[in-house]
Image 1 (spheres, rainbow, N blue to C red):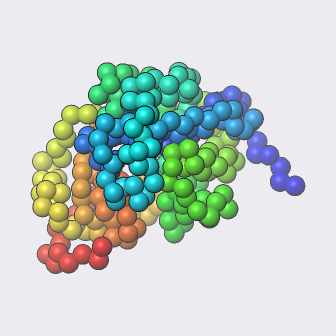
Image 2: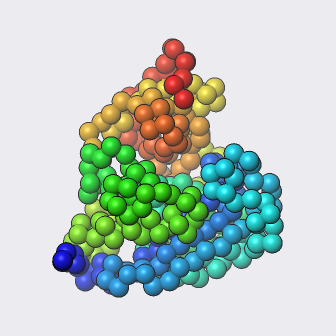
Length: 287
């Protein structure tokens, strides 16, 4: 029988909320949330409660997005609008919980955009990213997508692409990482060991890349392929070919949402971790 992990008093006392969103598209400033799901838990006691709501985005959901999550216009037409949905979600989380998401900047950008539109403020809850946690505690894996991590650690073989189902996978990933997380002694230690965010870090205004990255800005506008050397804080730097799509900012850090040819899907890259980049002359794509 496997012994439960040793947990510091700090980690044992924390209430976590694993959360996920489903949306009408990939870019938060012009798209909307259609579902929020969350699992409240502690590493000591397990699941405390769950939360799920569909959201009426007051617009049609594109067919190609429906193919991913299966949420249709008919399903959301009698659902709450975003403001009451967010108010319920914030009440569920409470002011003291630690939030966790997979590829957290994506969900932060959507919740942050919707908070701006609704005239709401979330609060100072720290937000962790399971992508960051797994790069740090489980380096060298072939893929850090939610589904591949769930398969790697035998949490699930399939992904629903629904908010509560994906939040349950995030919960499972945090529990699986408990031996490493259990060593964190206090809030300062948490911020030193892991990348942490807050909802207020989301900057809703249009963002332009710094002048040093003007060519990258042009690649985004013209949909050009770019080769980058990317330095991850845990893994060695790697060369990737991306097609930049959008740029956003959390606090002082710029992020680029891009199609990554190596991953064959959307990925988010921190600008300050791009060591070198060049626009490719051959613009044939393997997408």
